[in-house]
Length: 479
Image (spheres, helix red, strand yellow):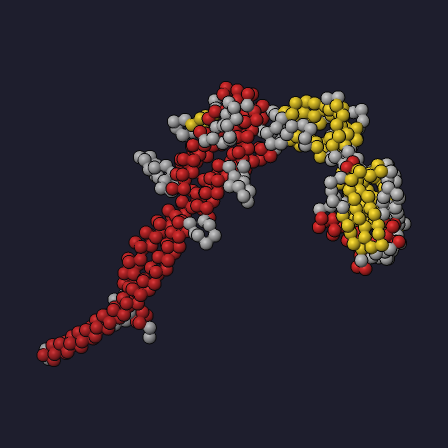
């Protein structure tokens, strides 16, 4: 019979309940202490998560405002089918007109059609010479450039239209030569197509040597089997009455801080380009930033408040990460965010965002409007610096860095649990150890009370026997 089940059998006392009560009396105070520790840990984790979420929300909202174009100049093109416009960060553009008389083109040569692209074409070499090729069809003249010649060897493995294409591309890639080869196929057959880079000086001739069949892929001043389908040409633009040429359709040296993409020629059409910021939008972003920072500081102060007569301490009252984050946020208004440039502002305080005695941020509206009007580029740069989310090689702006610090405090680093995680693990171990100790205590008490129960049972049996003998003696005496 199991010992615990037999408790009380001899003595009549409920030894089982007595053991349970004694174990409970030992366990409950310790469990209560562990529960209070766990509640504090859970509260701190929850509070850190709340503070982190608020900071992440501010970061996300600011990035979205920047990406939406609220702080930057909006490019405007009177005819976007002729010119595309892209501005550098923080740039504006006063209205100006440009005429696109021609767009840059890359010389293109094509062979005659062949029914089988795998058939032999001949072996030998093809030599590409780069420069200016005169004429519009056949080459009528050639002026070489500084680009070295490209020699392509055509052996047995390259002796086909596809082999020729692959050999030219491989040699050009290895040498960095400005030519590519492809094959175009239609109902008439397959053609080898050779294309250079944009610009009049990026034409090329092809000289064949070796088997007679390779002459079909030559293009020289003297002739050749390749036909010129597109003539290499520069882009031609007119700005301020001056005709200008550029070798490419991406033009970044004509308008400061702007890249023009020439899409089509439109002779006689003046395209107007401009880009201006919205002062109202820019001021709104700064104003909303101040309100959001003030709200975030309020959340941090509430979560880390000290106890007083009317309220308990905040869950993060002793948390060093929260304290450092609040200090960094309060110092943000006086922190230099961009490099000095003349008398332009570099700090949020100079825009009218100032910290009050109560720890909130107020906006000096008159100051803000003046800075947006006088130094819009600097204001935009400051907002962008705050919205910078960083990259693989950059830690990002101050708000992003604070968000990373909070994330590490909540989640830890790989292989490095946080202090709160270690505390939670310690509590779990303490609970397991307590369970083990209580099991041992219960077993020890059970053994002790089982022995006592046996002794008490024996004593009661002796008492009963003696009582029976005494009763029998008195009964015999009265007869």
